[in-house]
Image (cartoon, rainbow, N blue to C red; front, side, top):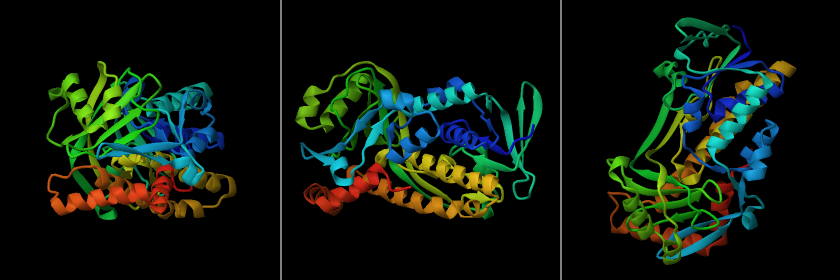
Length: 389
């Protein structure tokens, strides 16, 4: 097979890139190791920046998002038994939208199928070749046979554990990483959310987050040590722990029910530099990971994809390679700002096992300053709704 751009990974980053390229008249093929059902079964983030919404509109897949998504003008911070609202819209003129990553993926898959563009699922033994020259090649096995895709460029959108970054010589990369000593135990339940907006709770027992996927489906998290196992947590134990970390009003109004999904997500900060290796470009989780505290993972992937789609369009439509040459530097400026914000939010609200009394007082002072200073609230709001693209 022959295409202009081979995309590795059919998560939201790869699917969005494929859709944007197709609308620019650029031929592309997506290669995915897993099945469509497995891809749709991933439970991930659900807070979309306005930049991400704009990207989905450009891709022509925002109709259901606008019908079913929940626009949010603020978030709430909870500590010392009280809640404090951060009015995102009043502070920035922008808002975020609650719409699950699974739904974004579903919309992109449907659009790709409707337009007849090629996605190869359940491709095993995927390998990348020749991207340091002028004739890149993707090789994979399917249905007992080996297949090859010749292309001009390869986009690695296959996540942290994918083959794309692993195909690059270690000496060519510089990796930055911080692994946190805790994770988020999360459950999904068909219960009404405890509040109209997200609640970020800092508590002496640990962090908690009250989120939602719709007006009838809730997503809740509690901070747990990295040694914990999800199977050791009954639903009753989870609800009791969550309730203990919320303010009295939220604890009293919390509606509980059976979990329909329960898992523990480890927290890490990670960046790979650079993002370009010859004709291979990394995007999304293949290039960077952020703690979910700042709601930046999917949104960073979307901005990477926008930069890459625009750069490839300039290359094919104007024969201008300059945007491709600047892709890595442009992305990394935005990535590191999002890494900083996500690290800051994590440090602000979580309890660290090695924290001493001084650290606890500093954390409390930071929270007090944040809710009492308009300038501090605006800085949080600007980062939370997403820095300009």
